[in-house]
Image 1 (cartoon, one colour):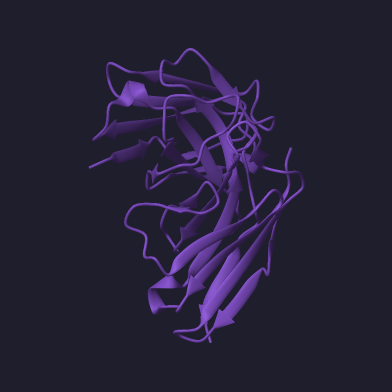
Image 2: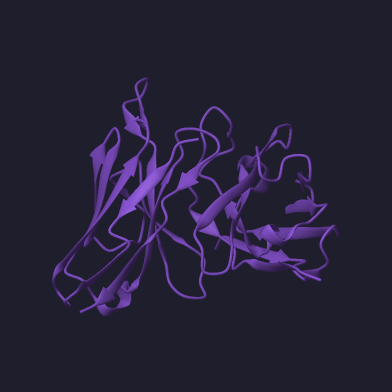
Length: 113
Length: 124
């Protein structure tokens, strides 16, 4: 199974500042036949199901604010929240869907400083 | 509007059985692969099982293989997860989630819609 490791486990960021979450996979999730990274990011608020933010490592889901962006390739990926808002307080998960079983990172809790 | 509504979550004793259902609406049900994922209290997300749009192929995490059975009724727009020989470590919120297309298996899926979840508690 591919192991997904996020860093940090938690971070506190001032309103309006940038939050950066890293995700590393134990093997590449780049599919050579289509040159796509099989990596997604989700946001989960307390008592709610996860919400898809980003797929194919950098494609923003419809309706997701453009302050959320994804980058990276191969084994190293980043979710950036540019200009943190109060409603962005949540736990963020990366997920690889390159192979079955799909696996998730342990989550990163984002709070307001 | 896409909606996924789970039901069937209850308290069950170790060794017991349970069937979860997920009623779907707002999309052409048979065109999409569906999965169950779970989240133990205070923990992260774990993929459990998936089924392709036609229902011909199913996939399971090693942790549930041989104990859980996934099926779908495309005439009723409903997904089912039969859970047998339940253990304490199966205690979790179980989410039904929709993939972006009907395929699954060569690769996995990302999930664009999730249900609100059904709590399964396995305890004596």
